[in-house]
Image (tube, rainbow, N blue to C red; front, side, top):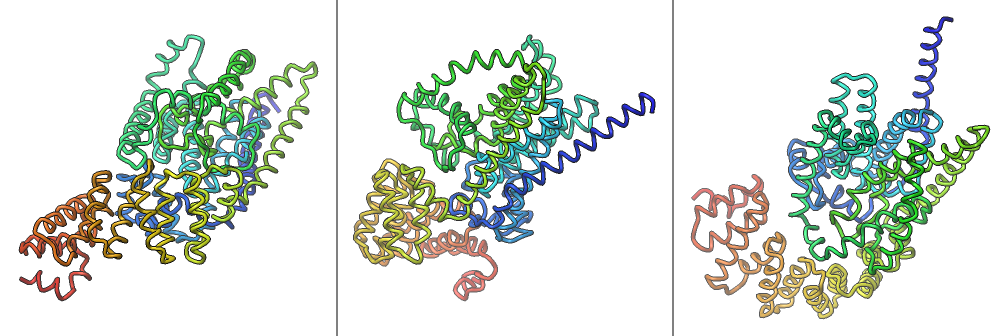
Amino acid sequence: MNDKSAIMHQAGVKAKSTMVGFIVVFILTSLAFIMSMQFDFISYDDPIYITENSKVNSGLSLTNAKWAVTSVGKTNLWHPVTFLSHQLDVELFGLTPKWHHAVNVFWHALAASLLFLIATRLSKSNLLGFFIALIWAIHPEKIQSVIWLSERKDVLSGAFFFASLYSFMKWKMKPHWLLYLLSLGFFALALMSKPSVVTLPIVLFAIFYAKKNIVGSAIRSLPTLLPFYIASCAAATVTIYFQSIGDLASVSDHLSFYQKATKIPVSFTFYLERFVWPHPSQLWFYPPTSIRDCAISLAIIAPLIPIFCWLCMKERLIAIGVATYVILWLPVSGIVTVGYYFTADRYSYLPMLGLVLILVGTIKFITRMSPKRNSMPATIVLALITVSFTFLQQLQLPIWKNDEALFSNEMKVNPRSLLAPIHYGKIYEASEPETALSYFTKAHEIDPESGLALMNMGIMQKKLGLFREALNSFKKGTKVKMPIAENWTRLLILQVEQKLYQEVDATIKDGLEKFPNNWTLLVNSGSYYINKGQRSSEELSLALKLFTKAHKIRPADSEVNLGCASAYMDMGDIEAAKKHYQMLPAAQQQHPLIQEVLNK
């Protein structure tokens, strides 16, 4: 065999070995999470993403696809590809959770396999690439992103992120415009799955372009990376816009610059701790309440800086790992506040790649320093780490089986949790209202300023016939520091049912001052005035004003159009009433009274 044939043979063997590794990583990752196909939907976020979202649970259609691209629903986050993915699941499998879980596992396994291809290039070893991909894929911190169906955005954006990175890597090795466009296209899909991948261009710069002269490197890379930067800026602009008008828009307003600044070091060390010691899963982590947490985090970070600066100069894989962790951590660092719970296991989905690279790079460096340079000790250590993480992952997976398992665990590991007893109590709403009320009361005791806890208490008290107590709970819910509009809506409905008409006007006025654009409150307030036995012309005008405002929010809604039509009819404006009746579905238009108006 001549030299050329030998080289081609070696290349063929290596390609075959890489393909085998790709398949093995995919299979092992799938097996690690296959248990989830027995799990249910859960009541936190799954309803607003999938099960109770009419634009998703009705499947894939042109109308629903348009909504996915132009709206965020109640999620506060623009991710059209994620919504389209959920719609496709419903179209194919209905609302059977088994197959929704299977799709999540598929995307995560694909992400891990793509990472294997990337890691083999970065580490120049199929074996190290295998451990990098597998440790990243099966680490217990991945459970939340893979098992929780609402986190489809993590596994989708992760797969597209790695597909973009791998395509770019192939383009760097053998430049071809198609590979470059593939990389850019996959990046666009990643951004539309979850915008937190906006820092991918900086990762590309750190891996492929960064030299000692950073400024010069940045200038030289700009023509290549400029389209990626533009895509990032566009996605960030759209995301910030939707967050500024969404349900979480006011979260950051309650935090001072000092509070935001103290969260950042805690966030940085949070993921380090969870990587090294992934103790049983906790769904909600609270922000630091004192400077103590920040001081501890800074004390941990301070000695790590010189150590890793030195290691970065000794081993390139460690340098890439440090850069990757910092760059991918930035969007979830707390610099931009997008929610009260500023840290979570799911936020580490991509940033953890940096920590895995640091771990494997450090073991590689230690092995290289040994006199015999024997790779067997490194292989044994990495195998033991992989087995340990797999054991912990399998131990923690059943926590996510259903609402009962998840929220009972949350109450054990997170006694401060407000939402855990609320969601646990909802399990018993229909069958055991007294039990449900006890858990809602427990949530109120944990946080007396929560309007959500008081609302749920009021609902159960009303169901149990405790109307005075229910009125008191709803009223308290309108005076707390964390109010929700539904307390005003439920209060006015109960006041009408109890014939406390003298109190309804004050409830409506107070609620609309605080939530002037809440659709449900507008419609129920308008309905009260339109159905009132003895109403003045001012009250009739007010009803029309409320329904008209609700109509601007949801112009196609039948209830709103009926309300507007009724108000116009009572005011003698038949032509205006006709316009709203004509907006009703054809079946509703067949009602004799509506037909009578339409035929005039």
